Image (tube, rainbow, N blue to C red; front, side, top):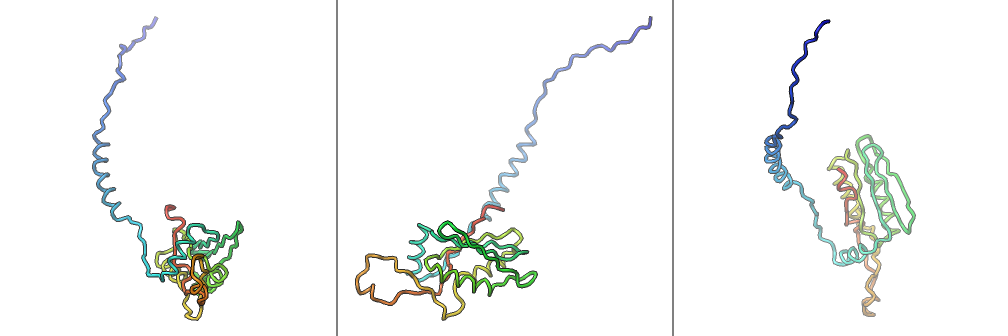
Length: 190
């Protein structure tokens, strides 16, 4: 009979120590970096001087928006204008003028019609894609805020019911501001 050689059995311990030093070193270095970088990330508000009547109309109409206007901006397909009013949506597409240029004059004319139909709306929501350059967003913002044509003015509905008879007899107020209250709908998307 052949005899097999057996290895002596060793008893192994399954206990070990967890070394947290590398993890703590990373955290100690990461926290100051995050704190410093958060100082550079700020939400900026562009303050503009608006006439007092426009400011009051914006404040009154932002409480109860019945009509909303939104621009979805894409570098490939152009600008999609969505007007939501009384539960229905009207969607129009402003195509690109060229491969890298938006049709800003077409957008401006279209938004003049939207503003004429909805004089109580002063807010517009932007939803740009991540591929849209910042300079293009600024150009579009400039187009939507104010009418370029000085002859085009938009009536402002009289919202103050407690006015005297003298104030009610005056000519209705008008403004060349279209959508001065610009907000970003997809601010946290990335």
